[in-house]
Length: 307
Image 1 (cartoon, rainbow, N blue to C red):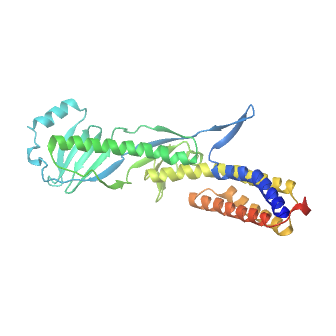
Image 2 (image 1 turned 135 degrees about the horizontal axis):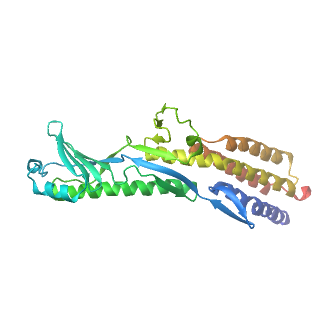
Image 3 (image 1 turned 60 degrees about the vertical axis):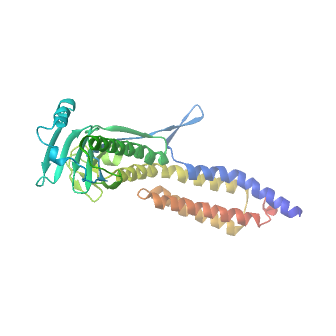
């Protein structure tokens, strides 16, 4: 009984040392830590994003659509030309498509069974994006995407009120054909201006910007870049854990070998990792599993003779 109590005290002591540090590794998501007056401050993750020609496709029923009334004498169209700067209406493809340009911040094309809505409210403006940590990157991008989506839907609702038709306002498909310019990421900004690139994920046809095909690709690029920068910090934390354990106990040979092999294997993996978030998380989960195994082994071993 006394042996079990002492073993538990030793295990709890090691847990108190290693668990907070390891949790810090798992939860680490801030970039470029700076020590000011003994207090750790973090630098936000920032980049520039230009979501150009962002569009969605929405279901549309033309049964009550007043297409026959849409002519040059239509009073509603005439009022819109006065009220909305740059508003234009026209048809294409043998009058099967109805184009409403600059209609409340969007371009709406009514086709056979769908409405194609391109958000024009942002034009070609660059957005300064700021995230507090890695998890926050996706949230900030999603906020902009949701706002663009809502603007598109509101524009379609106004068109239906004026010209008929109906919709469940269900987004059928996001148009990944939009151009999503990105700046403020070192490895992108350092591409020579005269270099032209056409890739499955992005393209560079302009001197000063790279364009991605979707917000998802923007999210992955910024996240992976942030993780690449933070990998050395995680590797340092693993080294700290190893040194603390070494300084606290002279553990048995098998346990010591397990710790050293785990840290040696994880450190270069994290330091070199820069491309896939899923791989990153898998490595961290593997480390956590190794530490759980380590703690379990300690709880089953009488370490008093090694202290």
